[in-house]
Image 1: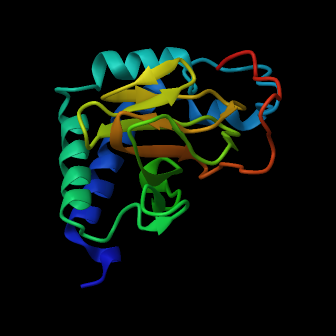
Image 2 (image 1 turned 60 degrees about the vertical axis):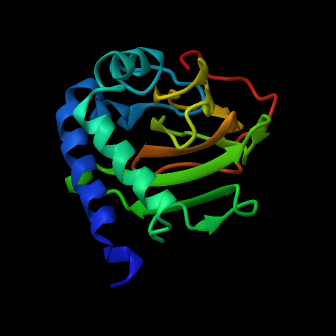
Length: 202
């Protein structure tokens, strides 16, 4: 059995499809068609951003069945070295990622990617831009680990950067996995740089 067909990978993708179908009403994906990702003009309601982040943390955080299933499968995959997630080293073993599936109708045209980061001190990953925003599930491997979102440090729960936002992914306090969902699979490591203006809605 190859890692592509590991049963826990397939369970995670299946559970993610169910989650994305349930929260589709929170995320108006089709309204993004005419959105300028650089200026975030004509920003439609219920796209990634602070409002969606707050709703996910209020309703889909610790204790929610989807969140707990994501945590269980991710932690098992990492701690048991199952070989199917965050396998590609970006900066050695402390910063790894891998895409678990491409956008498809079954995932409401989101891609699914897992990034593993591990550092007690503040550690920065690759600067990048979210053309259409991002929905990001923060899964702590160490209970003290936190991820820096656009609204500040986040432990267990969710971040949801808005369309056109850009930043360094940062971790502190130990190891975590960012399980993130990208509309149309869109992410850019070259279209923005530190110091560029952020969009109106973050």
